[in-house]
Picture 1: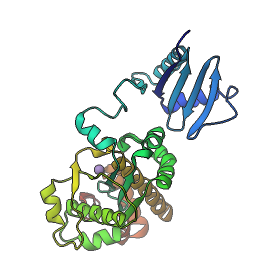
Picture 2 (picture 1 turned 180 degrees about the vertical axis):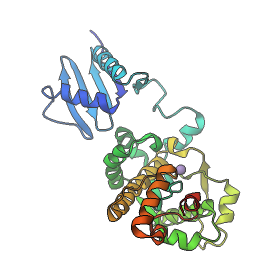
Picture 3 (picture 1 turned 120 degrees about the vertical axis):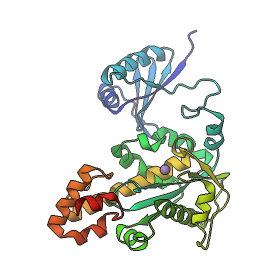
Picture 4 (picture 1 turned 90 degrees about the horizontal axis):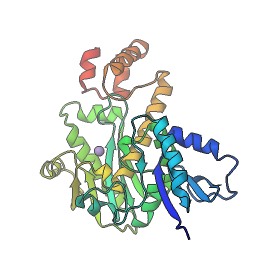
Length: 316
Ligand code: MN
């Protein structure tokens, strides 16, 4: 008898759309959790998840998978299809070395920040706790290196993460940023203080179970604690990991939640101004800043921008 196979691919949004359309009339009445649909294609069961992950199961799974592999490659020329089919001993596509494994299948607290490279908008830092049991759920959502996830995807998955994952958020608005840091400006010190704050708030919650507290390293450990010299409550026993978003799911979640609230704040500011605020600190940002000055006066900048950035000198 032929053996049933399971093949798993990560699809791009365009292929995902095609697939939804194609299986419109083949859907099963019941949809598994976090799936868009489950459908039958002769004797293959096809399950498409919201994250773009698709699972083919059955004796002819390889044939149907090959058809969609071809489609994915045709629609996204030059991009290599991400094959998530479980290979023995390799539990996730993210795992590439020993170090990563140490931070991945654990209960962890992680923190990450957004907005420190953007002229407009606040700085947002999130600390999040991921329990081992929630790892499959987060993998299905497509929580990986959050830097590679589009803004639209962030808006789709962040609310689901927020519901599942204990977290705390610290927001430093522009007015406070400019008030406190206009003299002695050191972005790394700001980050250290805010990371520590988000972590202390999270650790105040009851019944937290975790193996490690991981921080996406932006400065070495010695400097980090020097910056916190005068802070009353310092969270020690941190594990500093570079590029932690791609190695540890709690940091990836912290990053996604931070980005989600940053997008919301930018949206709110843009609506209030009637001008869309761009991210980053480039030429486009300078143009928009000038537009804001001519509409509202130069004073407005202190409410919406980080004045110590070079942009300020360039535009005034
Ligand atoms: Mn980071």
